[in-house]
Figure (cartoon, one colour):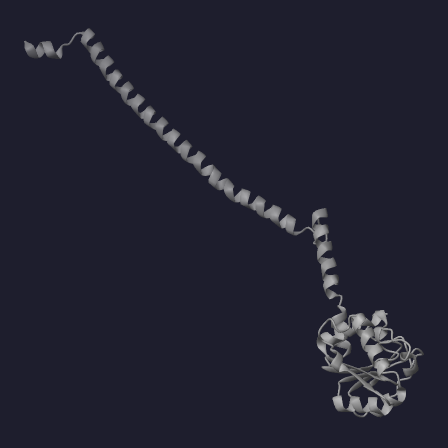
Amino acid sequence: MAESSSSSSSPTEEIVRLIKRLSGFKICWCYRWACNRCDFHMESDKNTTREPQRRRPKRRMQSAESSSAAASIPPDVSSPHEDNGVQDVVDQFFQAGKPTLGQIVRQRLSEGRKVTCRLLGVILEESSPEELQKQATVRPSVVEVLLEITKCCDLYLMERVLDDESEARVLQALETAGVFTSGGLVKDKVLFCSTEVGRTSFVRQLEPDWHIDTNPEISTQLARFIKFQLQVSAAKPERTAPNVFTSQSIEQFFGCA
């Protein structure tokens, strides 16, 4: 009796069982749909985080292109500030390249260490011993040259005088002009004699690298013994020997006139 009742279920019970099966199927379907949607969002998040990484090389390429474009600008194109800076460097270069008087003196004297020089017609305005009996005047334009020579050379000045008063007059004129202030030239290095031969003897004894004179005869006599000479003459003198240079003044020889 129980077996027949269980096998022969009513239509109502069949409907209930069908509804339960459908409910279970719906729950499973919803679960799977929810899982799939979750996976979809996770994948989307991964894609969005990867896209900037893919775009970074493109940004680097753009920066590289901009740097290469800057490098392709011609080097002579510059801003006004850069032009001013370049001009300052150029000005400093030419100022640095311009030699000073001291550099010119050393170059023209070929790094000589000892120089002898007569006074009349070179250092002094006067040109004869007779004029020195009245006055002695140092040429202002020659003082700076003398001071530069004394910085690099042992300088001796010499002249023929007719009396002691002339000698004192010459020393006073040199002192007034400031020739002794540098310390390179002292009064003991100003030599006096009574003849032209005496001046030649002074030069021979001192054995300078350079001798400066106005007498062409003395220059000719000393050409064999002195390494270099400078012959000074108001009129353009003729060069008498390969080691004898000529100039209208000592300032002109050193480029100061």
